[in-house]
Length: 402
Length: 64
Image 1 (cartoon, each protein chain N blue to C red):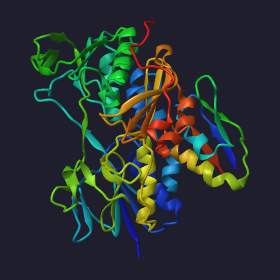
Image 2: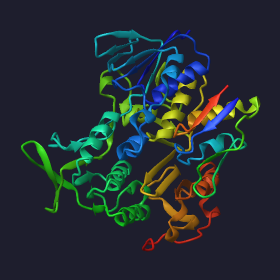
Image 3: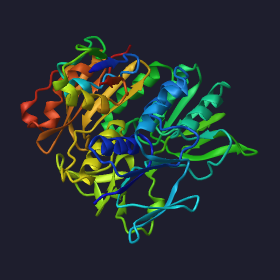
């Protein structure tokens, strides 16, 4: 009989897991542990968009009102980090020395931003937490020259927000195009978008090192010797699953917590959100997603499986990014060797849907300013329609000049 | 039950339309949420709660 459940991580996935347990009728002890203080649980996507740009007050990103958290009937241990897990005695240890026993657990500790060697300097920022976003915003308000290291989703969003504040912004990306995970043609369109708004894209050359004067960053030196002067440098070079506290616990750790198709890492131990790697039977592959919607969907699935659903978690992954006036949304997966076909609209008009084909079926769909069309085409990914059954409506060449 | 949507928070993911197609729709021009039924029948309550839970922008509020 389950009488004590502990959820480690109090962001989107952890909070959703706790709420799902209650909604599904679990009325035993419930403890929610989160290491971020002093903020209540908050949402992350707005951090690199509205909060950074200053169009939202931080409170608007809070996930729940105070009364809603109280209604959960959970012991909230906010501002406390879990430091060790003992699966023999079924206890989790906190950074204040406290030990909490459990019968089952859901782990949703997220990810930690990667840094670069020699980047512990004033003026160098990462963006993961609300405090990170507020500190970066304060620095941007001083009117600095900005270099964003890393042209993935986070880096390009931060660049767009900073450029929107009227700042001189350069993105340094070692790959030939930004957001290369979506393929070179889409990456080239994203580069062109930034160019149109006056953000400089320095792609194809890695960063050699950061320069500083008296411990304050002064610029970024690229491998070809180019010096990009900057008063603010934002590191957006990916993130690592927050699993250090699980070292020696016996849980399978690899690229995150390695779970089965039901998000289960060990008997009674489940994982959800950015930290969880699991086998997605729909795509026949192990995956780990740092997407907002997956945090919710996987938390619902993991909590259900903890309560005995035995239901494999087989979602169609979804994510979106907003940059300047452009909204990019996508379903599915985007293998590097995928073939691309435009299925709706035309890239030349900057409103289109493109499909990604792999192993003879549609594996992914991406919409560029085409939310409705994309949603209507979603069954092509969900049902993995044969690649030969979809017909290209336009080419995917270079975008027309605007 | 009473449903409200915040069009300023909406990010046009369309998850609500996938969950509860008779209750939510998306605007033609920018795919922002449109509420078709502010007081939907109780029979749709599961679909609507799922839409609210899955909304990646937290733009849907449901009151019993």
